[in-house]
Length: 265
Image (cartoon, rainbow, N blue to C red; front, side):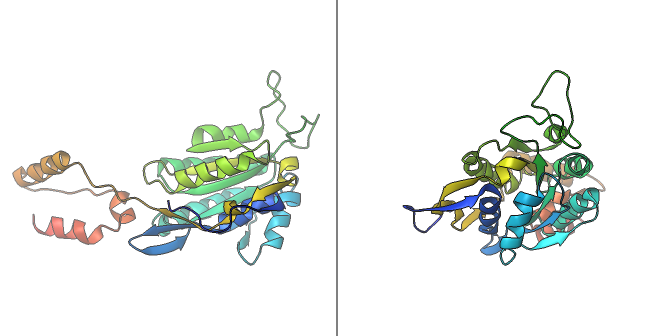
């Protein structure tokens, strides 16, 4: 990742949702000298838990963050997974939902993204951080844990999960989320659960938080010994068959793979 550039001594007052949208619009990936938008757009179905926060922020920042109207959260997250695969994991989509069934509809798509190491950013609304409402519409009421919400179903299927309970917590969590999304070994579904009161809470943000950042997507070299072992096994085989995984495509190594296969025909 390159260090952001720009002024560092001033702040700007925004809500958490506004700050998050502005931050996401300034994130980029780079590989082989080609730059891409990291978060190219956001899907959303609005309801209680995200309409007054993320919804308002998307309207106010429509010039920098494209919004795609969804009809079902399952379809939105699967569309985001497909986009990540098509982009070669160099670009991703975000998905925002309301509290309750809107969030649980993300679980299968999140599992798909995590299993296949495809970057998807999930932004479900969450319960009030300031107090536990009793009852909140479509709230999961746990008999022995007042801090459990439906969003906790996303924990086991996310490569990174955090609940933003204070505005200032967004800075570190947002950067961690981008790191995971752009790491070929770690990437998958990333979930930032956003309590509905925190989304609309104002905060004085350091201007450098919104500076452009470029995350270089690594292409790690194989271990020389393992590569030599694989080559030796192919040479010994009477009828060698190479089964290449998605990493070949994600690394743009199709030509190298074709060349290696052709030499052993």
